[in-house]
Image 1 (cartoon, rainbow, N blue to C red):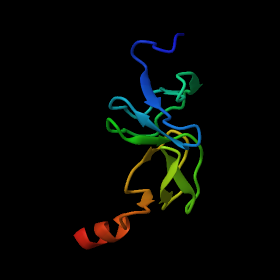
Image 2: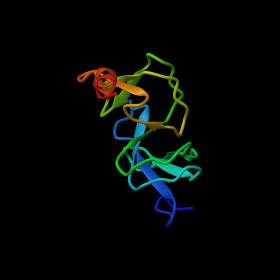
Image 3: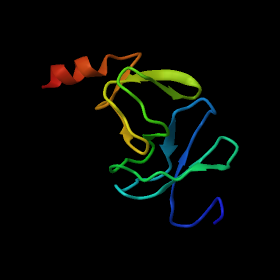
Image 4: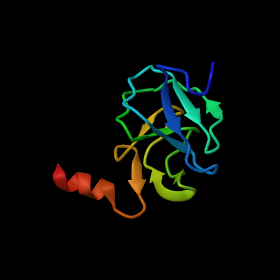
Amino acid sequence: MTIYEIGMAKAIQIDDQDNVATVTSKVSKGAQVEVLSPEGSILMRPDALGDVPFGHKIALKPLARGDEVMKYGEVIGVASAGIEVGEWLHTHNVESIRVPTSKLQEAEA
């Protein structure tokens, strides 16, 4: 297989320190996602544990509640629940370090 295999979902790890990767298209549950390093090499091929919208993140490592979420080589949030490799990360399982997303969701309920 080549790095640009046609038809396989792709995700990009932006910085070597990141524990997430950004998908480059909509990904369906069960699809294998080819994760590319910042240099373009294949890091892993996890299965998506759920549907993932275009431009959103998947976990590259298991995260426990309270673990830091790293993107761009920076902490962008903390896990608000346990997260498995290949799982979609968003406001339902990540608390922003800049905006209290759980408080916003509570206010909307």
